[in-house]
Amino acid sequence: MAGLALRDLRKSYGATEVLHGIDLEIADGEFVVLVGPSGCGKSTTLRMIAGLEEVTSGVIEIGGREVNNLEPKERDIAMVFQNYAIYPHMSVKKNIAFGLRSSKMPRADKEARIADVAALLGMTDLLERKPSQLSGGQRQRVAIGRAMVRDPAVFLFDEPLSNLDAQLRTQMRLEIKKLHQRVGTTIVFVTHDQVEAMTLADRIVIMKDGHIQQVGTPDEVYRAPANMFVARFIGAPSMNILPATLEAGGDVVLASGGRVPMGLPGTGGPVMLGVRPDDLHPQEGGIIEGTVTVREPLGPETLIYAETTAGEIVAKADGRHPPEVGSTVRLGAQAEDLHLFDAGSGVSLR
Image (tube, rainbow, N blue to C red):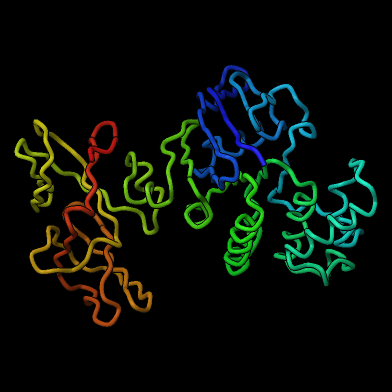
C-alpha cells in the first residue's frame, strides 16, 4: 500500500488549460472520491495518475516516489473502468489471471493468489463460468478481481458502477466498501454521483471547471459546505438558496420578509441564505411562507414543494399528516442548520 500526492498538477490541451493546479494529499489506505459534474476534470486527473494522460506540469507521487515519467505498468497501480473490459471467451478464472500475465510469480503462487481473490469477492464457485453466464454485478467483480490479483499500491476506479441498474449499484457500493475495509488498499474513485461519493468515501474531493472546490469527510462537505456550488451539489434534494440581507446587528432578513437572528459580525449587505430540505419543516412562526404545489411521499416523511415570493423551495413534513396541496404553510429551521453565503463570490460566511 502507498499514499498518493498531487502537487500543482496542471493539464492543457493546446492553449486550453483544463486542470488548474490540483493539490491533494491522499493517505496510505484512504478511500478518496473525486466527484463533480461532467467536464470538471475528475477523470482527467485519474488518467494522469494512471499514466494514461501526460502531465503538462506538476508532480504525481505514489508512495513518496515521483511517477510522472513512468509507464502505467511501472506505477504499481490497478485501474477498473466503467466498461468491464473482460474477455468473453475466457472463464472467470482466466480473466482474473490475466492481471498476472506479466508476473514472474511461480505458477503455484499465482493459483493461490487467484483463489484468495476469488474468495474475497465471493466468486469461488463461479471461476469456470464465462462472462455471458454472469450478472452485471458479477462481471464488475471479475474486473475488480483482475485488478486485485496484482496486489497494487493504489486502486483507481473510473465510474465503475455507471452501467449498472439502481439495485445493482446499491449492492456494488456496499461490496466495494466492504472490500476496502478488508484489504485496506488506497483507493481513488471517480464518479458524478454524489450519493456514491457520500456513501463510499473517507474523504470527498469536489471539483468544478478544473479546480478543487472543497476536500473533506462526507459529514464536513454536507454540513459545512465551503461555497454555494458545494452546497447545491452535495445533498438530494439540493439545498434551498434564498436571497437575503445581513444587517449590521447580525440578523438576516429574507427578501420574502422573514427575519433570522444569526449573531454574525459584519457591516451588513446582500447575502444568500441556504437551508437543506432535511432541516426545513412546517412549523408555527416559521420564517418562510409558501403555498404547497407538490407532495412526494417517502413513507415516514413527505417532501413538499412550496411556492414562495423567493421562488420554489423544498421541505420535509411528517409522512402521516403532510400539508395538503394548495394549502399555505410556514416553514422554519434551527439557526444552527442555516448556511450563509456571500452574494457575490458564493463563499460560505460561517
